[in-house]
Image (cartoon, rainbow, N blue to C red; front, side, top):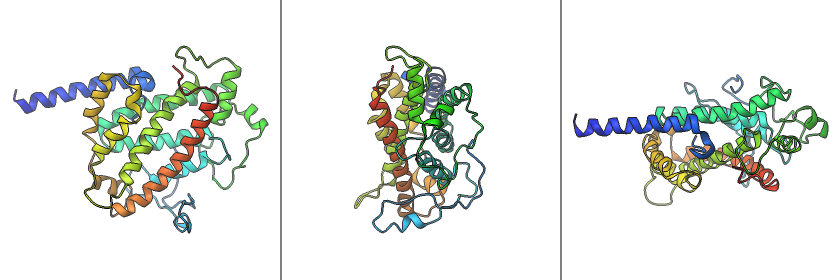
Length: 300
């Protein structure tokens, strides 16, 4: 067997092993991270108000991308629906956001797609808890952002204990489901693992959206690795960190991302991804605050 063949075989074995860690060890202490939705037509209604000074960008209608399984328009709609409450995060559209992010990771290829299987396991845990608590996971996953009451009532929380991040935290604390000293299968602990992964993806997309004033555009593979090193790597063992370096080699070049979201150049990609990053950041910040207020940022 030649040197190249041996190297290829070694990488394949390593990736299979990494996949096993993700699937059996999970996002918990192996790979917290790295990486369904409802049926919609391609053209969506108004999704997002840009932070731009004139707000012109926010008035644009975002269209679907024909031929792609991952739809950035759906991701945005889920993220916005999750923010319908003024300070909380609604869990059903939050989980639907992850459904679309799973499709995003799978679109990057089978090596990166290995990560998505563990994400699906985590979202399934929360959905199952919601089902057992009496809230059907088949309920509308992301209602129209314009038709949701902006304030969750106390009655809503009692009827749907897994209606939102804060209602889930409240019910699990009151029922003694959260253990601050050892691992459990609580929704709060599962949410924390997804929360950490969301920061990694947010930072990765933010870096891909950057347009340098001068110099070359760095490869998505390099940016993915850099985002990981400043986020999830802090929670992983040496072995998982080394394996992650191998997995990131498979991240496609920048032109792939143009095609994935139906844009023509870096300028258009930056505009679109910045909208995603801002929406993701709002969901992340609200979740971060809820977890921090209840001392849950370091759940084992």
